[in-house]
Image (tube, rainbow over all chains, first blue to last red; front, side, top):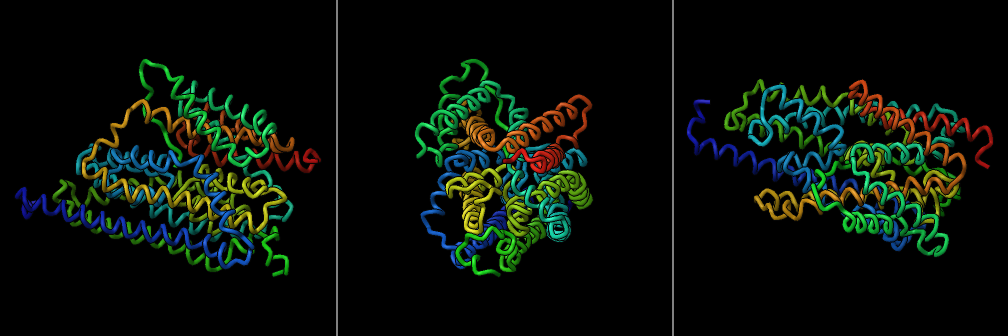
Length: 242
Length: 248
């Protein structure tokens, strides 16, 4: 540490670190962004599947209606915990709440660094690098190689049934997990009632609303939850999905 | 490839979902992450002394993070394998393994399939529907990254205005949007075949039991593995119900 004893060289080193991580964080994230878009774009444009741009935009708007709030809220929510450098890692690696944050916390505890300090920030960054490496290699090996092989040897009728019912078997569990971790009974009741009314009363009456149904549920739930909020003790910040 | 494939009406999803080009692009995304980690680690090693953290502590942090990620990563692996038949390997690797999560990506795909008049994995789930769903979920995932790219420099400038929007608004609206989206998708399953209804309910119960046991006996890993376990239980019950003729 003697070489960096003065405050100016210390500040210069940290500034250099911030500059390197921001620049390369942005470059690597932008390239991942492009690669991840080119793949489906290739299928749409060159797959000879007869897909129109209208179909793509309609599908995108249906997804956007459900998730656009989260696009902005998640980065803002995670920023104070992650710090600028780790932001570019986290939103590229995904599974932030269930994997990256726990890893960062364990690392900070291991070396006794407090969150919010430079030591804490560096420990979190290294921990996320460690988590990223484990994750990248387990995905490539167990999903990329073994998983692909597994699907090729599983009997076709089992695969067909799995494909048919995979969504209900995910969504039931995800909904329960979300409700339990959120601990917002009032919002949950509002959401369930709104969803039931929209899907089983409104859509049968006005079939044209079938496509934007989830977007309608999201907007109505958000509006009702806001206007029916308790006016004492605001609830704690929310847990998120990614 | 059969001639039907040219129209996009073929339901042979995996023949287009596992195309070599898609594999190359998926591996490129992994490459970007590996490159980023290498650059970050070198930067941290260089600036370590200025941050009062020793080289040993940096190594310890890396190892601690890696070890802590093993369980959660394998849990994601299990969920990903279950989704392979739906999206093929490259899309699963990028969308579920990285960037997003099983919850958001399958929800996005389901919403997109609905706009094409199909259900995810259902009889109308053909190559065109898959491609549109893949495109829509990638665009939504891209929006998360774009807002990260835009917001991070703003937040870094110490602009706390964004975070002080209104704590009540930040607490209620995202939670409501999230629960609203998943409640809508979950309840929509109850309007499908009896097997869909049973599967969704069984999966919900399985998750409920996992979370209750995790809380009662303080088993942290059960919380991580809850989704994978619930999917397997749900699929098993679906298979039994389907083969016993309940689907008709």
